Image (cartoon, helix red, strand yellow):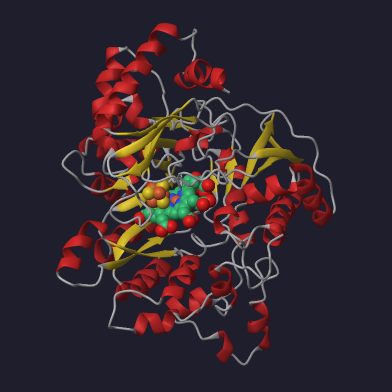
Length: 564
Ligand code: SRM
Ligand code: SF4
């Protein structure tokens, strides 16, 4: 448990925030600056926003003695990554009016808009609200967007499992009405005569201190581990037997962030602590996993505050027993499951109910019109047919979903006309299995480029792949601009982690299914260094691999295992 006398500054901000209100109203009215007050930058995260600035323009503005160019990023709450066509049309419009125009699909199946100026935040949230969309709790020390295996073709009972994403999101949403009050002009709770309105705000889960740190929940439907279930604080693995959902295995303690040069911080994959069956028991278990983290998590040092550290400090058995004490029932032994892949299922696929799904490649999740493809316009046209929904994947891609047999031709014609099918089919396996985080210019923590650099690096790696005839290998490659791990590079077969401008640590030896972390292989390589190392690795892989051995398993066997 944390030292009550040594709480981090954010702990004070949370408890003093009057139910996440802080002084956001005053900050919004302050016309002298494009920024908000410092404490409010922490509070606003719980409403799904981050204050940022354009790092490309810092120097130029400093030279002119101008303040930084402050803008805000907003992230929507979309459990399981589902959005209707109508809502997509609204998001598309709002992005065009108020933000940079680019819609960014994140690694947790939702979307972000960047570049909102302060005066545009309220109109943006109001427009989202009119469309039935919100950004509540997508950031901050709270449960975030719940992810779920995206493709409905994964199982005949996908919908039944998928419904849990919504249920969990609702269960763990904060009780404060601050979001409605600040952004949607709802009457202030304190001004309401009705005492029940005040009582409604009492939050037995988050109380006034919320969680010690962010909290992430994912749901996986084996055999596809597209959500990278073991990187979540809490992962549910659906156990399906004879097309019947029996319940879920529960894994806890996943989390990826590390700090360069620190031995105290580490990436960790979740540990399966048992199985439970009914909906009531599943939701109760989830709730109490959170309360244990709330009560035992480190509130002094934010670098050591995630559940993974609480778990390792308490011990897995002690954590499980504390959860069981609070739920009043014991978890059963974990049931068998098998993951065989993490890639998205590109192209058209029909599910058991006869509906069609088209998974398209969105490079690094950036939906825009560029010289290669008019993706944003094409998706808008598809949405306007009203004949589909959309799903985002944890690999930053998109699925045009729920298309009836009779409507498939209409959607297909648009995809053909805008060359979306060609674009998806032409991308190499390597490119389609790669993800990169946002990094520069908006991420304040970036040490190096990621999404702006990864596409050109892949173009230089592809000839090496061709040289060793590895074009059909589904090698999972990921890049981040810093060690926080937003594109889950430590769970990749090849991971690049930015250390400085143009420099990346190279990690290898993770498996293809997301059940083994990789290991640091070479430090701070520049592009030439990366290409030389990969040339050597691919050559050895080609010559020394066992039959059907994946690149990850090979590099683990050859370079990591022996060194352990
Ligand atoms: Fe992340 C912070 C972007 C998924 C670990 N992440 C950030 C911030 C908000 C930077 C900041 O704190 O100011 C980045 C905003 C960049 C920008 O300009 O948009 C950012 N993270 C992202 C996204 C958008 C990356 C992407 O390109 O898709 C992902 C949004 C997911 C979502 O929809 O909620 C994103 N972040 C992740 C993941 C992957 C995942 O959850 O599957 C991780 C690693 C898994 C984990 O949590 O352990 C991740 N982000 C972090 C961390 C390290 C947390 C820690 O335990 O220390 C930070 C820094 C922090 O929280 O202090 C961070
Ligand atoms: Fe920013 Fe680092 Fe996350 Fe990339 S990994 S988005 S650079 S915090």
